Length: 360
Image 1 (cartoon, rainbow, N blue to C red):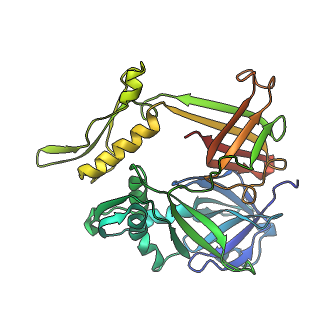
Image 2: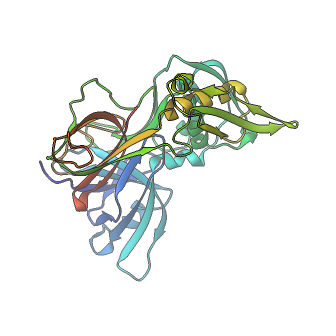
Image 3: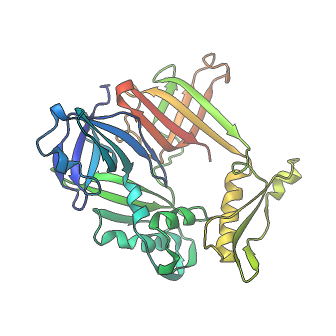
């Protein structure tokens, strides 16, 4: 399989249309994505190889930089250059934030009663469709409904609300995918996916990372730290009128009966959350995620030998890690585990691809 080489395209942020190809642009750090999160990367443009209109094509807040796999033509990452730094040197440097960052610069008001949770998040995100980048909202119902009110004077960004809502029991996941807007590949759209689960999760994934094979090494991180493990959770809201809203006590009674100790976790899911139903949904989701702790697998694979990112697998997909017996001292009998790609990092210059897998 060919090495992963990136072609950088400069697009108009408002329309998504390609303005320039930037062959002298290089990422000086890894590209990365996470479900429901903003990621950043550092970039450098060598002016001796830049097009004449490079300045307009990389204008902060006006442009979108898109990383495309040269061999497959799959857009892998897009980001908005916010600081641009250059002077007498031949290099201009940028810090670009992934397209999700724009959600933190738009605000919303919303009211809904008995609305599917995905529709609530789509309604909160609706202002993105006016005077913004080429967003397309792709929402799939969860089958779970809620009441939600967001006032203009609450001054909550769309990003903060989506991150607040996705922490509730029954909530969908979300991410922003960069996709070609036309078959001629002259412009891109930004699809805000709001799905019960991002990606594809078959019982037996076709995507396998193997060792020996494309995986050079891996790390399994198991944690029961505060915020990662608990058998009892309470979510607290803001104080109002001398009192403080609270969820019910959510306890993993089955684990306690099986001999686990009581590990308590109390937290506030976000400013302005006072509805007890929402607090209960937060506490229920947190307990479901933390009851037996977290298990995360970080793989270091050769990008040129691994299943191709953007073609064979994508963010949120289930992936199998297959480690042969006798290869790993940590797992002498070998490993065969399926987990979801909650995030990834790609460093084309180092031929390194790093899927980050979380077990459900």
